[in-house]
Image (cartoon, rainbow over all chains, first blue to last red; front, top):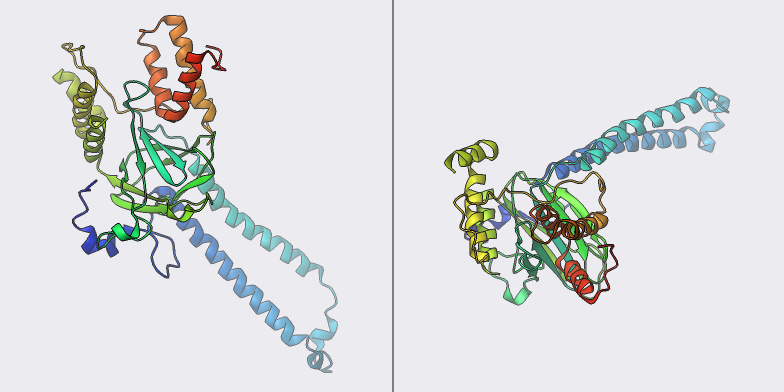
Length: 263
Length: 116
């Protein structure tokens, strides 16, 4: 399928690829409020962690410095000789960490419960994991049980890649979804465990045979987002990528209409 | 028709109205549309709604319940009743097509485990 962005991808792929990058340390660029929330929470916790790390390293190094044998036997070193117990210190180093834990827990629970917020979805996408490909179903406009838009999505082998495409990440049929729309994604599997993961959207959802797992996404921008299967599922577990293309609602309808007419 | 279109565009935005018109063309292409009624069927952009009976991530029972509710509706109200369309659309949106095929085959063989 030729997307409307395909003309610029080979030239500008370094700008537009919401995909893993070489030597990457940080998160991929967020496209949903959930992923933005995860990144913000990560920054909160990381700040606390750095403070705790610095404080603990300082205390340990000061302790080691003052309580070496040579220091403790110095006659003028009153501090070392007199420290045997201190209830006040013990209370402080119990209460202060509990405050820090509360400070970490507040944004954590805010994010966790916001992810469970129920918003009426407008589109439902079904994702079925197979060995070793994904299949996608858009059945909102199916007239009967057999006329849903269903298609398989296989990895593009390395030999068939075009210039600018990403190795191990490109697929022959992408998932096309509208931006700025509440979408319900139902994930399941047909054989063994898989996991449908797209980091830019903040999604990682296990695909369990016999179970339907629901996640909701709301993409705030256009783009093409890449992910990979995240649950060991056999020999080709590393070769089942996911590509989600976020387009305008009009373009989504045009694409869906074209898919329906192919049935 | 134009007044309902302008109402729809006020409620949902002009892109949705165009989407509806595109969807209507697509639906007409798929169906062998005998229903060339004067008022075109208003196809809203919608999917299975949130069901408070199934608020969590596991929607397996939601799909199965909608499928059973559809057949219960068909049994109680008859095959051509419009009310059953809601349940039909809901289970088609939620349930993987393999599951629906398997259940339909079980029904035909008389092996379906549900009540209706």
